[in-house]
Amino acid sequence: MKTTAEHIRETIDALFRSAGYSAPELLEYIEKLELENGRLTQAVRKLRLDSVRRTSSDEGMNSRLKDALRE
Image (cartoon, rainbow, N blue to C red; front, side):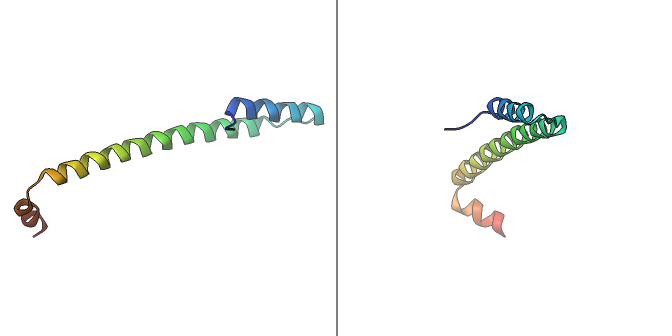
């Protein structure tokens, strides 16, 4: 079962309340990690798409052109 960030935040908040403790910087850090994770996920998706496009364009070249480009 995959837990959501909202569920984790609620759990941490409930633990803090029951312990009589508060750490708003921890929740801010979690939000920062979520944003960074989203940014990295988008970057990986873009890189994969670029890789597929590059591979398919390389396959379309004939072998003489590939040889010429290698030299």
